[in-house]
Figure (cartoon, rainbow, N blue to C red):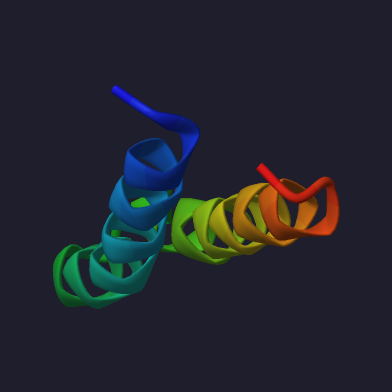
Length: 51
């Protein structure tokens, strides 16, 4: 699994978790934005170093 694939998976999970968390009244909805930020950070640092 490459870093790009991991970042995309984190973005997808981060987008889905708030929807699932708010439907079930679970605290999992708060993890979604953190995963989105982590995925964006991974993609941004990957592009910044030119790899």
